[in-house]
Length: 313
Image (cartoon, rainbow, N blue to C red; front, side, top):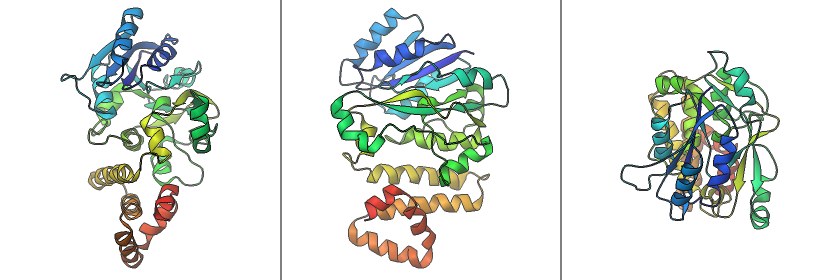
């Protein structure tokens, strides 16, 4: 196996060295690709030092040296990669020693196009733990039992029972399959949740297999300043980001002929439910009355989602 690990770097000078070294512990890692995204801190210099120290580390920036967000940054990393397999790692997260144990066994089979595992939580400070433990606890981010690849897309879209979700940090993809089958890589117009949108489409087009699900293969680093933590905890209002996310999923599903009609309807209802939940009060209740009459399943779909309920009530 020749794995290219892609790490977008933004505002992560304190953490990126740990991320890189956690990836370099594996002989299977052919290269670690750092894409520096015009970070406001000293991350670029730290990345340069890592390149000088480690022969397998490569550093790139966008052609205009500007800030483009995680989606375009990961796309550039894929473009620059030379490995047969792609793995991702956020600059403030890190891999555990068992990260590629399942991959070494599963990718022997040609039909396996991707493998996912479980993500743990690491608090970088007591302050971060005090602030975010009620949100993340010590629980794993994972699909809770082994499913057939054909069930992964619907399991994520519907979140039936305790299917669960997997993280991009725990995903390894056969590069040739991704390039050949994906309609597009990461969406460039989503500043947040672009990884979730990518995983939805990926699980539709590729056969993804469960790896290690009962213990972490990577750790999510939680600190006071990472953007997705602030969004999840509502320190940054998630309204527009969730609406944009479901709008993107809805737009893709509408154009994808192979998605069943009932699944497209469910996705549209999820999009509507977030539109409703995040609308101004007067408009919100007029939309609720409208959909209770013409499409009450939009309301029912939203009520299954905790973010919808929290924003609605």
